Length: 279
Ligand code: SF4
Image 1 (cartoon, rainbow, N blue to C red):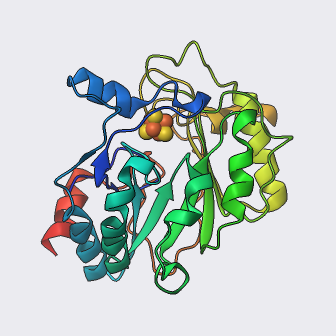
Image 2 (cartoon, rainbow, N blue to C red; image 1 turned 60 degrees about the vertical axis):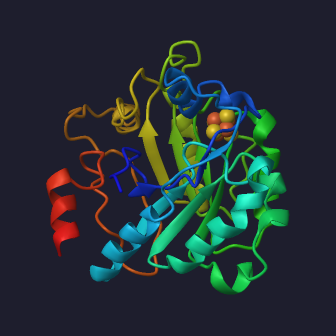
């Protein structure tokens, strides 16, 4: 069980790996790049040997009297049809790990309702469903997400490929995560910081927690202070890049959340992580 480098979650779980592109936001898919670098065929889904990993974080959070975020899945799509034969078993893991807030993020959210377990409304209140929308052509996913009963819905607005702030309807959405393209395509598909600022303004009107991940950069997690600097500048203030607010809000959770160190853009240090594991 590793600490995820993704700043809005504690852990990630991929019961299977593999996928294929479905929309413009897939252009810089880091999972594909990573698998292909290792010589693997990304378009064939394969099961992983990580099925016990969620229980580790679940137990750790339980010992602290806390909950923790678990992002499912970062290297595939939870609702990919090639995983139809495995998903029921994966739901069983989710059902049992109730100290985790499961962040199930999918670009195939239109297929989700048919893939939910029979006891979805009774036993899965600890699952937050999300979808990706970084381009106008993906806005229909937000309506599809709204149709599904669930305790909280969230949007991954990353990579943000154009200004969608005037068309995006945040009704029923409980968290907005925003960021620019990272990796090899970051220069070709750069996010303008004004687009992120317009979304931030929208969330101020709707009362939606807003988490700015990063500007468009070559490396994930660089430029996490870009929006804070822009907002300060917009007010005519001069901010210090080292101390400026990272603009990282997290929704209320039923139990206290394990630390998310938003100041440094990390969840907790490796030292802290080991301390938690020993307790
Ligand atoms: S849906 Fe996600 S995992 Fe699948 S190709 Fe697109 S970005 Fe990659």
